[in-house]
Length: 381
Length: 156
Ligand SMILES: [Zn+2]
Image (cartoon, rainbow over all chains, first blue to last red):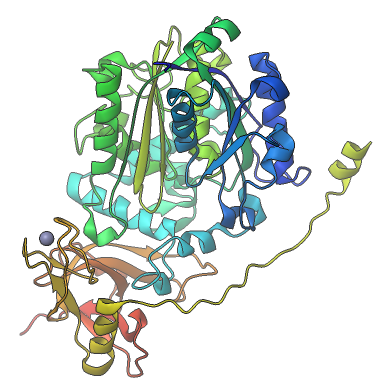
């Protein structure tokens, strides 16, 4: 049985507010073509299994993975789907290899958020007996989490806004990013208020696109590339669904997931050892809270951490050099795109946003209301 | 050639997902909603093993996974844990914005419920403020039988 899983190559579409010229399977086709070419393999002969991530409601059909084998040469092969977030598809793809069942796996995720009204899907994902009729969606819930975080630890909307300024600024160096801008904290604070304290700029924009990668056994990964990226650690954990069951100002599930992943990877001092972090901030405050959950700073110190400048592109531990989700990445693709960005960093393929000499990276995916579930992957070269 | 055509004039096909559901709410929630409808009383559940009081009611304890079978009556008063004011409209919202929504910990409960906050000046919203439930005149045994929670007025 193989003991290491290598990521051979990663690919993305450019992310855009709408991609009306491609249907969903064509998004998958685009990234599949790119990743197969980058890996130098034959889709037909070499890929044994296809793991995809998409969601039925977003795709507006049951079995959202139905068209995927058609565009990935998947007929008469092993095909399976992970819902929720793409980071979990990478984890599941790695399990396919670790099980000894497959030697080479294509992992792909897609979503076109422009096709429907996401607030309806968010509302439908919320408890239907006691909560759904209130009309709750993720932005209202996030606003309540952000408020609780401010109240408990004295974090400020200015500190949230700094995340937007940093990530939209970083996105200028990322050719795949949808939105980039030179902003000030004031620009963010003065933008349209959605749900106090969250403004329209504090929320990730509607986005369409896809992401793919090739996972392989150690032996095959080494044959295919001189720059394999190894999955060194993984952890995932769930919090309760009901907001009132949780302490919203802390992210216990992420703390547990990251501790598991670091232990597996042999990381003792995350902030010293990790070179770059790509995390899933659907809202600006989440980047601060998730840096706490990832053990990069102490509980309640996410605000001070962004103030310190350490998470800037040229800081000690850059967070979201790609521009993060705030620069526009669709749900489901979100976590997988974090892994892909981390892979490129470790392969030295990140162009202007490259962190020089990056050797150890953390990629984070999350999903559910107020970050209910978290998946942490530690990657190294 | 096809590429040029789609760039110039992309085509769409429309679809709607309209699925009616009649969800069973289960044993404890049935009792919970009947108590609200008939007596304007909010109930939680108490775990017989670790003694925590959970609302909305669950048939399994969220801490120790012990089975729970009975409801306990709560006063309908509580404390605001966190809140927001909605300033945007959406297809799913039950109220016209702006309105306040919060997470409210009822007295005697260890968990909190999400609901609207009414009869309040948004500037006065503050974590820790005391609230009490206001019920709708017409009640249909669902969560909207609670109209909202309003601030408890200080005596004197
Ligand atoms: Zn218990």
